[in-house]
Amino acid sequence: MLTFLLVIHALVAAALVAVILMQRSEGGGLASGGNPAGLMSARGAADFLTRTTSILASVFVVLSIGLAALATMQHSPATIDTSLVKSRSAAPAPAPKPTNGIPLAH
Image (cartoon, rainbow, N blue to C red; front, side, top):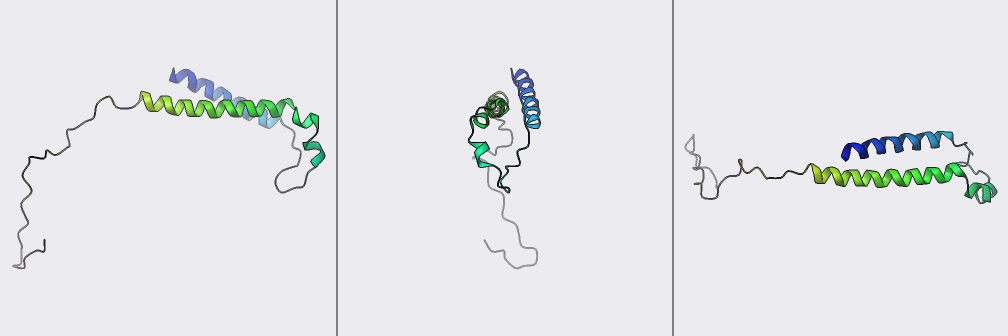
């Protein structure tokens, strides 16, 4: 299941890149003024490539979240390794002895 979704995710990503690269540059980025009438026209609002880009981007985000959740559930450990946990009944370590005759602060 995870492999199938990864392949679909890669295909959606490739299609998203292709659709973005096919779009014509309008020159209406954040820095330039652009033509405000072209943005609000019926042709600008219903452009096929714009709609396709938004749909593919939405599918990409949903697949990314789904794959992250699926990978977390599939790869979680079934048991917890307790081999390195110290038991509470073990005796405490002995206090270090001073080497030069000066007692150590506790």
